[in-house]
Amino acid sequence: MNKTLGIIGGTGWLGRAIAEALLDSRFIGPDRLLISNRSGVSTFGPDVRLLADNQQLVELSDRVVLSIRPEQFRELKIDARGKLVISLMAGVPAVAISAATGADVVVRAMPNAAVEIRQSFTPWYSAGNLGDHDRKWMQRLFECVGSADEVPDEDCIDYLSALSGTGPAFPAMLQMALTNQAVAAGIPLAIAQRAAQGVVVGGGQMLANRDPRQVIESLMAYRGVTAAALQSMADQNIESIVGRAVQAGAEIARKGM
Image 1 (tube, helix red, strand yellow):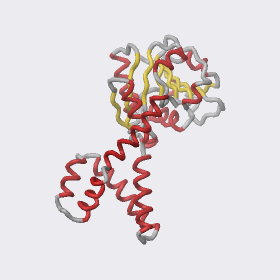
Image 2 (cartoon, one colour; image 1 turned 90 degrees about the horizontal axis):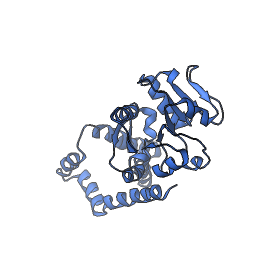
Image 3 (tube, rainbow, N blue to C red; image 1 turned 120 degrees about the horizontal axis):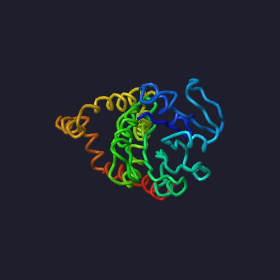
Image 4 (tube, rainbow, N blue to C red; image 1 turned 45 degrees about the vertical axis):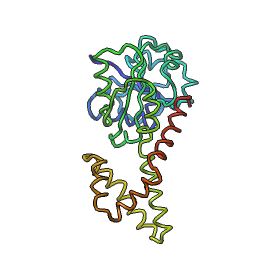
């Protein structure tokens, strides 16, 4: 089924990254992709149609992606009755999207900044009757920018907005903390930065194919430097610290942004 896809906000960082991945993977042809933004400026190829009118995009598209900020949604006036609407907004529930757009089927998804390197994990949830063909299509769409899972309820999207939706934010904070503490201990800044980056980036690559619990257990077994550092984190209940941080973000998503 050769459907057309329209992306409102398709020249923003998220919409553009997704559009480029869809084109590069040949998930969709450029003649079946429409983009709208307020500026009317695009650097996509000539076969990708750019529109300044969001309603016109909706009318020409079978499926519509909302790649806009939640505050911009309040100003968005579209009639998407009969269309499949895919929202990439945090904190805007499906019922509000359906009420504002008239869409019978709304999919909420939460990719993260790793779409730029096509390593995002994207959870998604369907509110409405999504057929098997559309469900498979949705999964393949998000796999163009990484990996994806359909989740059982909308609350999962709100929670994961604060977990996987944060993308590189948590690793970035860990890297900054390691750098700053090393500098405070007398390590030159450039060396501290490289050492911290090695921990976060190199460690992350290793964990791509390893069980984290097994990694921790094997290193704790040596009862040396690493074990002492890990035990200190455990004594300070790092899981509770992380849990409170994610819950704080999830609460914002549940309340609406």
